[in-house]
Length: 308
Image (tube, rainbow, N blue to C red; front, side, top):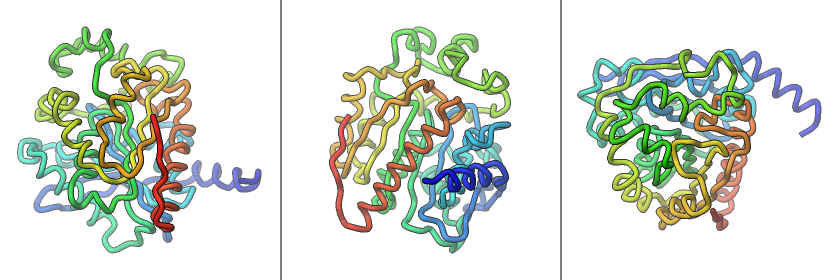
């Protein structure tokens, strides 16, 4: 990329504004932030974590940290979906609690948001933290076999010792000060006004307590074994919730026995909230680079081997 190209991308990122949209899916209003381009290389579908919303992927006050804006500037349509039970669907949190219902709602929302628009080479799912549960379900579903790939971050199989002591058996009952320490330190990694997550905070649907509890021991291993598309897994250098040592990352890699490819990376100077930190652009470009490899592999019918 030349200096002129870089300037053009930066200008586009600074001026592009994602649009909030709401679509009806079987009687449930599903909301999202959408950055749509006319002839996309592909479509990136982003799923936020717990106690936040789609604004996680359009970092408030920092457009160059925004996944939506950077992806659109580079030619991708990007959709940050408010997961079922969040955003406009929050009043229906009980109704959308079953896992199969949430998968159907997510795929239905994507179809209605795109509404016949060009999808380029196809869909790529990026998920963060608790959102990895839905993201992995989308990939493990029969419809997920056509995805270009899957990106996961802010998750794992084992909590770090400090996190286990703070979170206990339920994240909902964890002390706020302790959770803030896990999610937002070191503080130098993030814009000061975002520390604690106030600008992107959201009510959490009650079903998520069960999702969090079942994820590492049962749900993650079961779903991962059914994912066939390429998988990219990113661990923040300063991830404080989940173990990010080599042994722990190998344990995650071992779950994806059917994936065409698995690649694991560590984001330097990245914390739990990779899309909100000062290295957000580096993280997003790393994922989009992987997506480009998935597109090339799809076009040429090749799948390269990755490793943790």
